Image (cartoon, rainbow, N blue to C red; front, side, top):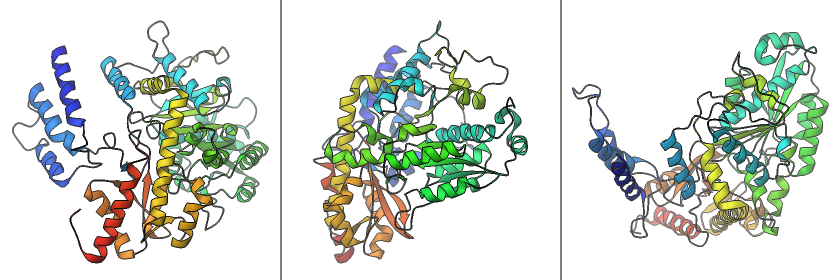
Length: 513
């Protein structure tokens, strides 16, 4: 069997490899998708669920299924709707170890396995990488599957805190009482989640936690800056009688990448308001959390200014499978006290380990899942292998590449960077707003008839891949540069070439490129 595995891994590597002569496509094509669909088991066939055997199954996986998957880890130009990143080589190797050992990481068993200690070591290293303070300031820490799970934990902890603050001393936890009972006892008629633009996962998390999607109340600063938080409006909401509040801040709007706060003063004000009115301050780190790990250079100073104050939050979540380039699905969650997470997530009847002696908690008691894969190992491997400086340089390369693409788009006739108009976009590219750009940007064609089909044209061509979105009621394209494979001297140039081709073909008809 070991020989078979060795041979199989060689075949897998050959299947996923690409070269200068045969570059990987960001997405599959119709012919490969059709072939794969035809090869899927037919429930009406007599052979359905009959034993296929190892060799034939392997052939099917490599020859039929693999070509019909997208290429987000095989190419630098998979710049789709979300920052999908890729998987660094050391992370891929660690992921193979995860599957090979099939390690259980639900219970802290220090006499049996090092797994939970590796997980905690990775979480501590990330605190340092993102400059969040001392590990002991973030007692509650765990790995999640991503933004939804992290926001579920953040809202659940917030729900616990904002209702508990209004209950009588020594009352049962909200998690035990239930929302209805707890709110009645606390005299709370409504729980709000005050948010800026907010990621879609925030409303989903609100639904899962039981507060409801309508609990999310968006408070944009203005029509021209909808990503910014209106802090005066936040204070007004916090003053309402009988209403408990969770303040949810996005460190990077999901569409534009812009920050909800403009610096440390905004975060200090939100912290002050949360403390004064017994609210919970939760931050979705999104892509903005990575700007805190950029080099301390002038070109990144404004991004670091916007990201200042993250450490003032009550809870923080972030996805790692995007910019850190570890496998899907991997996220993190931090909060000040383990006791808060334990109150929400503990398995009924299980005895808690001491919360006072610094012990590592069983992940099943401080997270959503009881059954957990060892998703921390690839993260640990990347942090150890790359180190702070190399990761910082990788992040810098990604930001510079995104800005290079932005400049190309701004000066390409027939296209405009967003937010803004065509003239302003060109000025912004040269002056101030270029320093607002980090890992994502937004653009559209000025010709509506081209703009309506541009994303499909780009993606079907198979050289680049962009995300579809809308801005001010019109189609727009989103580029998120997050793969470790990006070459800042080569890849941005391909954008200018192909956008020029699409514009030319739209006006004068197709020509071979």
